[in-house]
Length: 320
Figure (cartoon, helix red, strand yellow):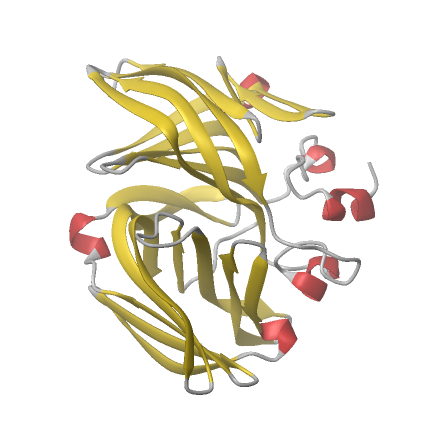
């Protein structure tokens, strides 16, 4: 498949040509499932460095996380229809089938969750995914794509002796690929708002770009069929940025639109440990929670268009 086709279809496996090399590379999908009380996310992926090629599945719940290694031969992918398989587990935009066992971690996970009513962002030739024109730049350290801002989830996951039921609950799907995660970044995502059918995602990262770095931003608030997008490439600005270990207060501006995001969840204390790639090696510890609470407000001039709070949000705050 040519690069333009893959760019327009970011859900597909982007690294097929790299599988036969020792180029530093990673690619991972993120499938988040949450009900009113709790959630579970799965991160299936691969990583390649000078010494190893591996597949993996990371799992994160409200109070635990796991990293399960597989040989690279356990990774299989299809393009039409899109799905990936690692070991006995299968992941697609239509649902997930999970069958994971790891004796060393005393871990056993099984179950099926079906997805429906996937709602994705609008795209165009200039903006084939959330990275916009930056999607066309071949040397980006990390590429990001949203595959489903919101979808309905139905099914159940059994993790050891605990069962998580999803009955017309909420899901979210995204992915990353490249060689390394940014050194510093914030990321948050929510679609369990109390009084609305909204979905939201924000990422602000230190982006290396040839001889210099810049602070890159991608953010989208989806209200029913209306999108409010705040990004580096559409001339949005960061007008307030207060971030520490247990507090986030960010304000963005595009034209006469103002967007504010707040959360006071302590990720480093209550978050679960995940592994992130550095030059293909899954060796950087980061901490994520999927139980954060965020409040999002958007105004135009003096008029508040939307203000609501979402529970069971994904949140990462990564500093050097």
